[in-house]
Length: 289
Image (cartoon, rainbow, N blue to C red; front, top):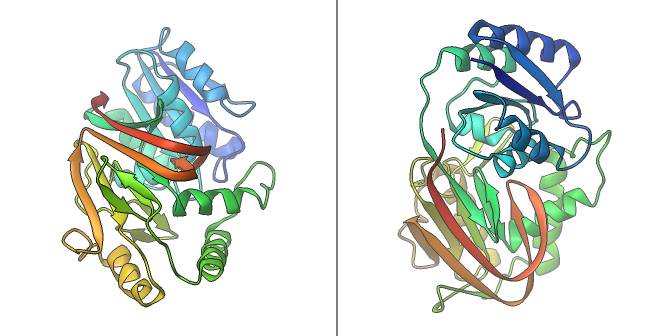
């Protein structure tokens, strides 16, 4: 089977030497053609073209590259994800090795599995999307700039979060309405568990989310400074938020519509999608092999 290897050479854990090693492992399964991204959203174009020419597609990139890849996929083509970013949430959530060469070796012989994708306002996402707080966090970190195209690391996210909490004095009032009736402060929508990682530490925001199921929503009704330690325990332990009266938790949903009181930042897989007054989340079940 002929395979395409889509590589983002600007991702933090991608080097020419590792790319050659990944190619070598993948060639055990047949011929491989490597295609390098050259600009933002280029992976969308490359995957769209590769979908019509190859039997299988591998993506060696970070979370942003994976997001572009699934948004370019045209047809039912098996796709493998090789971690090339500092976080690379999707392959880790799928149980794949963090070492890209070892991951490529595993993928060549692995049995395919079907997973679902999320979609928000016509943009697909692979592991998570958010409206409000975490999207504002993504925007704050992106505003710091990227060194050679690489996003700042976990420390930058931590400082940005502390800055947001300090500015708001730990208070987040209801600012949006879910499904026309539930008032919440912000919304986190997960397609996998964990939601993300800080270094090696998993963030267990939506502990019931699974890649084979629909979407899970975690939305605090409001947040106060005194509740922050409890929210941190929920995030690290993955226990308490599902049944808490202070949180709206929806499991395995096919669609979730959220209306904002004012324009709010929206993110998908850590990519800033701008400000919106409405977000329509959909589960694409069994969308990806």
